[in-house]
Amino acid sequence: MLKIWFLETRPQFLILSLILAFLGTCIAWFYHDVLHWGYSLLAGCGLVLTHISVNTLNDYFDYQSGIDLQTQKTPFSGGSGVLPSGLLKPRQVLWMGLISLFMAAPIGLYFILVQGWLLLPLLVLAALCVVLYTPVILKTNWPEWSPGLGLGLLPVLGIYFSQTGTYTASAFFAAVPSFILVHNLLLLNEFPDVSADKTAGRKTLPIILGKPKAAMVYSALTIFVYLWIIGSVLAGIAPIWTLIGLLTLPFAIKAIRGSLKPDDMEFLVPAMGSNVVVVLATQLLLGIGYILAVVI
Image (cartoon, rainbow, N blue to C red; front, side, top):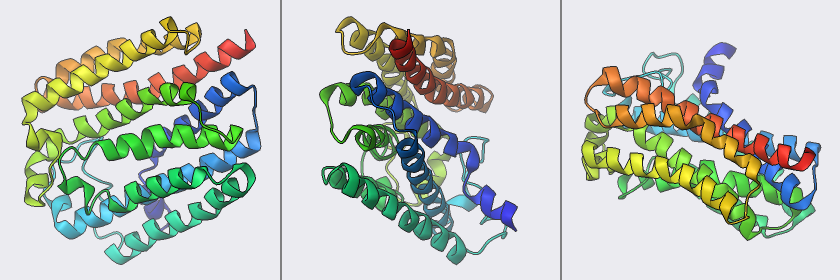
């Protein structure tokens, strides 16, 4: 039974939260010369709990809407499969999502008390992204901004704040790639779900723009991530060591090529896999780049 609950969290996707916590910590270390491993671990736990809430609530609402029974499941999209298989009841998954979010709340409160109330607006915005994403935001034009914000930019800034007690322009610029990468993670994973998402009134970019134009948006944003990294170094905002983030470019090229053939699953599924590598490895390498800039 514990294995089923564990699978419902979609553990393979929780790696993203760990990398975001790592990146935010490394950025704070570079810009402020502070490194509180205890704070980093605690904030990382809060982020993982929030991510679990996102995953489970998404599963619950997808099942309730009937989408889970229509999606073309891939290794990277289509939900956990736990509810369609009857391994758990919808009510159980709903409570799991809510309890995970409530468990994260005391961690956020702790950092508000320790580091300052300016963390509160960030946490409220993140919580709204979690709760409203599937039932509300997905039914508005361009919903991909929400995961980009809630599981990209905001976590990096939140971890940074938990270390430093402040926000800075440098930290914001350093978090922009995370916004774009997570935005694109959801965008490409939406391609196989277009038919099912339409039945639930969703307005993802592949539905609103059509797959070919959505693929162009994905490609342009992916290229922009690497231009942003280079530009940040040239502008003196980021250390030169962060250029190691460019090492994922070959995977990005493979993902872009696959996205341009959105109806051919033989190309799209490997592209989705390459995109996961780009999202995770680029942010991991950026974090390592900040570490190298401190220690070398």
